[in-house]
Image 1 (cartoon, rainbow, N blue to C red):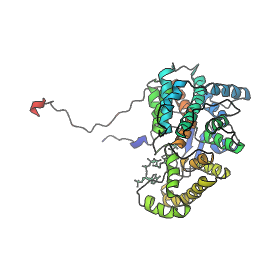
Image 2 (image 1 turned 45 degrees about the horizontal axis):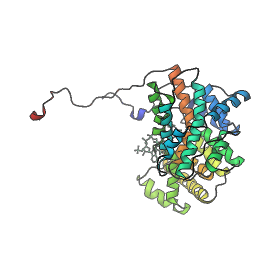
Image 3 (image 1 turned 180 degrees about the horizontal axis):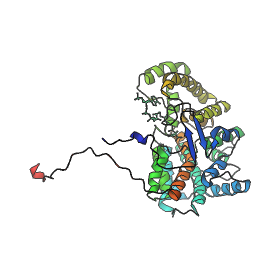
Image 4 (image 1 turned 30 degrees about the vertical axis):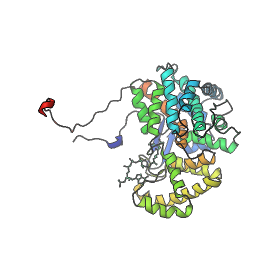
Length: 379
Ligand code: SDX
């Protein structure tokens, strides 16, 4: 049979200047900048969003103008708020984001245009932030609240969700989470979105497609699923027995572990782990952190020889929980999406504007050879 690359492993579907990964060494570069250098430089999420949308780091003036464009997106229309609040509070928050983005696909007159695409993308970052605030508040039983302009997206977002002034450390952690999840080359969600926009469907429809893929537990859904596993274990003293019964037995996968590209420790996981420590988790977050640390050691002992290590989703849930986001309704994956929407759009722009071709693969046929069609009374 002609060869099929299962899961499109090692298949290149585009060229990119945006992000590249060394899976053996565990290195991630955003347009040539190492992720550790970006975080250590205390870059703002908006600077890196600008880098991905416009192709270079902004000057102070460019950054101020960009922030204003993002803030224009905060004020989302009532119909997009209702596309969330009309659903039950038990809804999955990523599906709520999909609904709201679909409401924009239904109403915004978007066409691909090199002159306007980037301004549109900046506004969509703002729209996605208010959509995510409304979605999270909805599943937490709170009234809708849109973002208000402030000196940073991270601060405006935390204030909108929690109705309180966040601490500097909380803003810094939210800012860094927005950077860490911003892009990662062409994972399943980006690829799904690329297929959609390759047909020249609008940018919002591309984001809906990407959200649908991200929602799965093998991809972005692992951010929530990893924390759910820590919750299921419940106490650090139970880690060994749970691991033997569920993971060593092969009954379950260790969520937040393993990666198609990284065959060593995901550099983002190291940074998320450090962020979790710096937030000095208390209560449930503290217990889950202690469980996660023990699970990490067992997981690396068991799977390290097979190149299976913690990925970005292993500790991110602890950071989100320490920021006050409860573990429910796939909120952690919705926070992943809030960050990744910039990476998705940057890849869409790069593809549609510079290397566009409808994505249409083939399938190897293994069905019946030609045969006569018999009428029903002859069958
Ligand atoms: C993200 O692609 C990206 O860049 C994604 C991402 C991004 O930023 O966009 O990095 C974000 O999605 C990170 C991954 C989050 N997913 C999880 O944590 C879910 C758990 N991990 C896996 O299911 C798995 O590791 C994948 C899906 C992430 C990658 O798996 P592959 O490359 O498809 O490998 P595979 O499923 O074919 O597994 C190969 C072997 C299997 O064993 P055998 O059947 O060969 O004996 O490794 C085993 C698997 O059983 N394995 C695991 C495992 N991951 C792989 N066994 C236990 N626990 C795991 N986590």
